[in-house]
Length: 631
Image 1 (cartoon, rainbow, N blue to C red):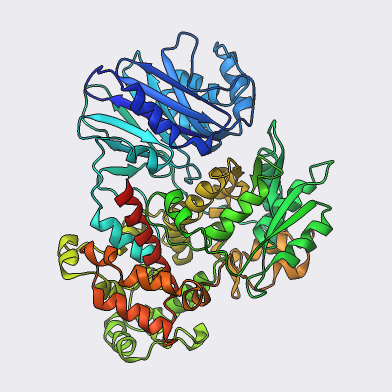
Image 2: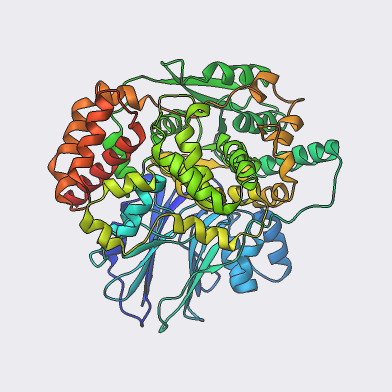
């Protein structure tokens, strides 16, 4: 696992400023503290920070072919590199190392842009081919590894693992993108391909970019998508058996490392399943770690301990106190752009804990998106069934009116929050789902933003992100469509971003077996009824795991990975909230309606509404603005 940077003169062969390239590289020191190197030739420069995991002695990058005409800098792991090495050697290619990085070089020589179809793993890389005068960027299918890029004002194409490296460039256009702000306060993160800056982009998952010298900036090209192609009918027992075998294989290929390896164990279904598979393949106890919370409402450590005992792991637990809010400013620097998932705090702590004993950790991320594990799928499908029984011409006027006039009841159990349900029923499937997952609703954002800022949006609305993905979706099934939307937005934009930055802050590599693309493809073809059945998410996954995990691990209520924001904002962070929401930074930005900021603050403090999530998003945005002022 590493940090990569690169600069290319797309117009010719101007020299790359070594000092600028080195500064970019050093902003990502935390991603690869073991080694670093630069490569420069006329018109091109690559930089690399290395976290040594495989072939510790010979894997230094940037790495080239025999004559140096092809160079690559790479972040990630190619799990089938040994098979590809054998194939490429048979085709006449000569290898000088036993690391997976060199496979990319020779795969490019052999298959060109199609090389990415041969890679099984998580990857982001930049490759330079001097003979063809081409730079080739690639990002893995699900977006496990990040890749940012920009065209500077003086005509250089630059890329990096983190946005902070691009932000160090003197010629990056760093104006805040109003559409990114609208997206952020809707989703809590900024979905691909946008970033907070108008001048920088994310390369979307499953995309490549081929830039030729002398050509205008190239457009990204999609090379993969989740197929959702139905399988031939299978008996339930056969599905369960094949699911376990495919999971076992996805875990097995992720156990290759020349450094200590372990796993996160939350006590939830997904991480417990990964640990169960690991334990069945190892003669030694698996290293597992858990973060516990002092507040029992958030603590799952007892469930993790059950799994650890059952599978004989070498288990250790750390604790997050009810006052662990000191990371707020740290997170602003870690994520480089506004990021409002407060579970970044315990994620940071569990990565910190894991790094004390291992360099590589397997996680259970991706199971909820793949197998319909989120409760919101159940709610959305219930609403969709009701919606389908009412003529479209009646839905919007009737339920829209009820939604406007019914009182808000955030404090009540969801079943009693009729206002939210009425509002969802007045919309179509995609708009209803968007409304259900937004951090701040359309109505709230309309009050949050100043008139000047709304004018600058020129009618843009954050739902356009989901609409665009829905239009491209390879499925018409409603549940599969919602999963597809999450696989394209929430998974890469929130979950994988959160884990990548938190793990890399501690030089920890995290591998995600449930996002093995072959496993994802196969699961996508299962009948939706096997994923969500009778209100039970991950139905077939849980059934297949009954021989491997305790019943109360599989079928207990999902808790999530949360922190007590409401209590913090009315207690130890009360002054911080006051100063951020009512202080000059947000007000002077020109983006916000000061009266509505005061409303959020006063109603939350009075206990009239729980505005924890919106307030956290504003705190993180204010912290980002303060960081920008210091830049």
